Amino acid sequence: MAFLVEVKNISKSFDSFLAVDNVSFSLSKGEVLGFLGPNGAGKTTTMRILTGFLKPNSGIIKINGLNLFTNLKQSREFIGYVPEGSPLYNEMTTLDFLSFICEIRGINKDEKISRVVSLLNLNDVLLQKIDTLSKGFKRRVGLAQALIHDPKILILDEPTDGLDPNQKHEVRKLIKKLGKEKAIIISTHILEEVKAICNRTMILSNGKLLIDDAPNNVLKKSSSYNNLLISVHEKTANDLRKEIMTINKFKNVKVLGNVCSIKLKNSSDSNSISEYINKKKYTIKHFSINKGNLEEVFRELTYKND
Image (spheres, one colour):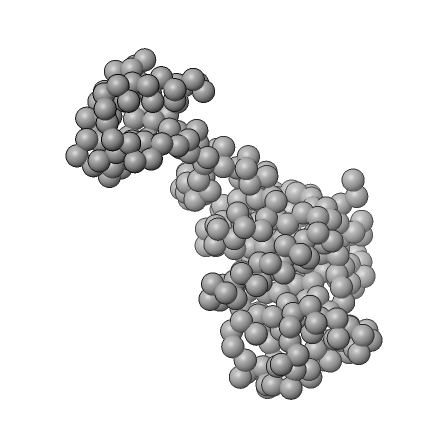
């Protein structure tokens, strides 16, 4: 498989601070990568390196097979980038700004502007000054400049930060659509965003890459994955916990409010527990197997490495 992005052992220091520590990964067409990490983890630094704005102290980056820093201008033709906050020229109208982007890229503005205006529904604000636009429309204009040259690779830093739920939904829907034909990297603090639109998850902490896998596999690393969750009346939850611990010597049974969480030893355990509590005539409000929790994985990995 041909990779659109290849990152090999990149590191970046600012004086004595090591912001990115020997990170490697690759990305192909059709992959939407959720890039997660706490503040100061090295996400933004990594993205700035990928776009050629920062040079690593060591390591190699290839963009569509080209060495990024020996073929910088050519490599950037394959990349669309929206920095955090989507900075724009607020005194320009939307049309003037997109025309300016076409001019500095040396591309046909009539054809390219028409395509992104249609894609991002910008017709109604073309002649409006960017400074007067809503946050949602400003984000769309930022995406438009990143997409205007139809890049193979899209790098988005906090693309839905500060947007209302409807605006987030529209941006996510667009990213999913674009993800079928491009390689996309999304840096985000919003874990639900990863579940909604990404088919791959990476977690970075203290500059180190801790995990790189499909979201469903990442969920399996959650300490509560495959736990049996039983919701009963709150007054009886602790009684239920004590009784379950006597069945086959279950030791890992926790209570939170009215929910008992039980670490299963094997797949048949849930049936034996269900039969037992039915005989005891507990009133069960909810009974399910935990499929994992991305926030829990994130906390467990990054707390250990902070």
